[in-house]
Length: 255
Image (cartoon, rainbow, N blue to C red):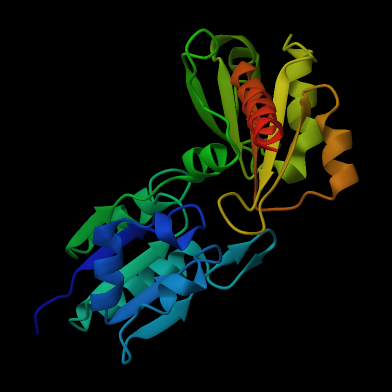
């Protein structure tokens, strides 16, 4: 029996219309789809009638499958000759553990293909009218994981990030928001630095809170912001306010 191919596919940030043409085709053709928690259900509805859907999502403190179990499932289905899609929220290679899955497949001689998706840093920021680069404000961006910022084996150089990058985009950091802001402030980041948190970015449940690094934790608590949420820190967060004011002016002029 010929070994099947595993496609490691990015589903985008939440809005199903942000999926790539190639990714959608692969979903429609797949014999098996192993999908994550944040994949929009509308995309799963595109699977063929006899396609098998396997949930392997993870939420903080609750994993349906371990990463090793996911690796074994991918290999198992491919060895059965099936056309497999590993469907992951955002982009597989941006905090998606897609690299680990590709290595696990390559080590076993399983053919694979990586299909990129719009990562939540781009999707959520754009949906919230926050450009991650903006002339005269921000010329550099860093993507940072917040989920392990207190883990001793994952050392994040907050001392460097506080000064060497114009814009910080922190994934999976809402649980550690106070620790993150404390680290940045302790290393000299200005408390008045514009900061935003985007919850459920690009979906119809999106909420955005903006403020300053010094006070954003209080605003997030007041709004009861929860995962999934993206923290964006830097000057071009101010563009959101500028755009909002221009839109309101235009509405008043029409009115």
